[in-house]
Image (cartoon, rainbow, N blue to C red; front, side, top):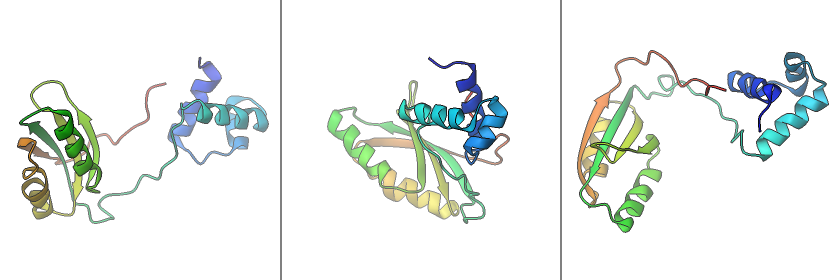
Length: 151
């Protein structure tokens, strides 16, 4: 179970994962060793899955962000595994969800340009034997970036 201090610690780390044990201790009103031990426990228990740097896609030349809905022809386990291997191997596909509703998968993609997105759809996704069709939406503007989880 998480107590109020754990929740505040998680909230602080979501905003700045570089906080030292000393900085956390000041925010949480604990000693640095207590704050460090709490962080270690939350890591060990899986509340904190890792630490990553958020990169600017535009600075990296990734000018097109899109969402691609994938509809499968068939839902057999081998087709699902094969499709999962395909999407895992593609760096421009940054996250994937299985969905209820009309589409089977929702893919979030970053590409350099529209021709790159077109190649991903027509040369990678559509040729897969389990895929029947795809629908894509291009992001015009992102009003809110991926934010911290509510704690």
